[in-house]
Image (cartoon, rainbow, N blue to C red; front, top):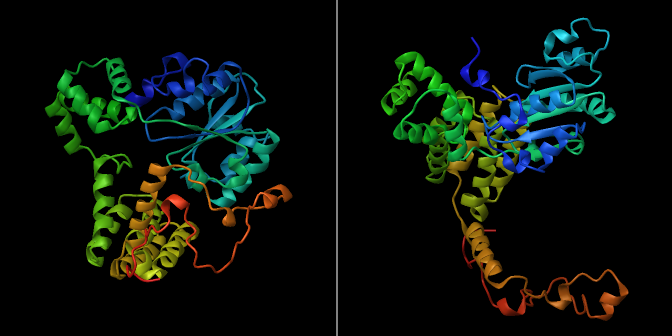
Length: 393
């Protein structure tokens, strides 16, 4: 009854397809596995690219007792049972156990779903070496993992699988696909091997043969997850942003509800709102950034389902706010000049002068706090990036 993708999961490093920047010859994760280096790390990358597979291969390489948990359904009690040496139920949660290993590896999928208190709980065990933690996340760990825990983990960035790797995985499935069906499946899966294999499995069950038509029929008859890499995801977030930009709160709320009801990460939505507040509202109504940041903070503290109310509040505010892109457009113009002119010399009077020698060389000489002097580099003096009269301060 195991899913097809699970049955096909490689058990040896040489059988893994993709991620050559990590597991190719002399690459960091391969060296760690081959040298049995014991350390905690985080695997950051999109769905279906090998995070669980690499975690299992690593755990076997160091002869560890290996436990898999999802941060969505796991709390401190489950972790505590694993760490309790006197708990007779400890090994019942093993995915596999190699002999009487003293080394315990916990694989925590979706580690970004663990809140600060739960992550704090892990910290002393990781720090002491009593626990080897392997976290997996589709979200940037810089935002989602507390600094103290992140500093004790190496971060490996996994990439979505390119078309050549996807073709190899599809070929290993043992089911014949013509070029057209293969190309369609690769495009639909968008670098997610698990999704491609699941589609093959479901299509074979329904239609026996795997063709473009049977794949499309299967897709229509399957309740696929709201994948963060799927076209529907990008279409919905695009409609959401454009509705706020058009000052249409009703449409914006509708697309917000679509995302919330589909299980979209509320912090992803809130981040886009923070960006929108500066990109599309900006100086026209600077308080929008304050509101958007407060919505993001509320989402962090409260979580679903109640944080949907905070999101709705923020969306209505941003949609109704006056719009202006002056600061955003000014920054784009600046970036063009920076790329074109490179590192132009900074005027001497506004250079930092922390040493005696620098002061003798004229660094900081003649600096006035409230000057009307043009402080741009000489080659750019007189440039006006922020257009006068645009938006408000």
